Length: 329
Image (tube, rainbow, N blue to C red; front, side):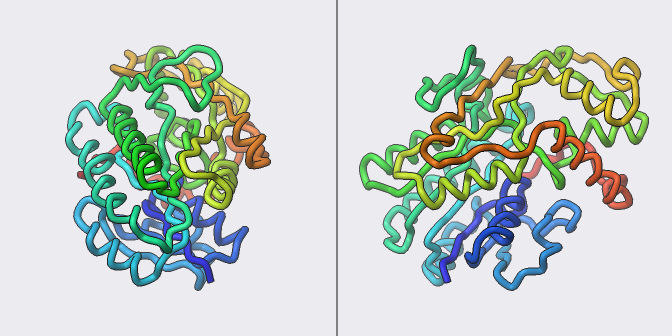
């Protein structure tokens, strides 16, 4: 049976992709992550208890030799990599940690993986942050102009991957996903954090008044597109994954307040903007729709309802979790 290796399977995006593979395909799935598996409240796939999934605790920063030894043993046809230092604001404090994980360790892994004949496709989770602040609809060929250490590290990784494609025909494709959300997301992210703060009676901070414009894509829709990219993309392909609805953050929070029957003015607090925060990402996903026949199915309102239901359902677990980002090297 064909094997898919998911690096960063403990991450929000990675765990949802594992869950989607278990639901929609017959692949064997190997999850790799530097940390032990989290509570089932955050890892939806654990509730399936499927024999087609195995977990390996391996760290991209320290265990590349072990990862390659393991890959050579199981010979995955597909490797999908979600592992990264992915937070934006904290990257200013420890930029070397972001470059170590997102660039140096990745270069170490892919320099070896490029020679493995068993590999049919490598899919890399990039980010629209590599574009910096943009105006108008953004297609996949826009020039890079990163605004933060995180974005610059991801841009460097993308360039290395494309160099491998050019010189070695490395079967790699890149994804650039809009703001992803859904049940199981880290509680410091804007949608679950807003729900948690409202339930706790705390004020939701709106950086810069919440005027940034973003698209939000449900994790299930994103996973569906990643699967199509994994199976059908050509070497060097880059795909945007985004809803066509774009909202200001303050409008997003307003919707959550309305659904939870609280006044926006009572539930929010205006704060200073973050350094280097990009004003807008209006990603054009036409290429994925045409090439792959993909389209998102879950509306933002449906997805927000799912997150609210998840928080209510898992409240006994979630109320004891931190609502702040905790950095790990």
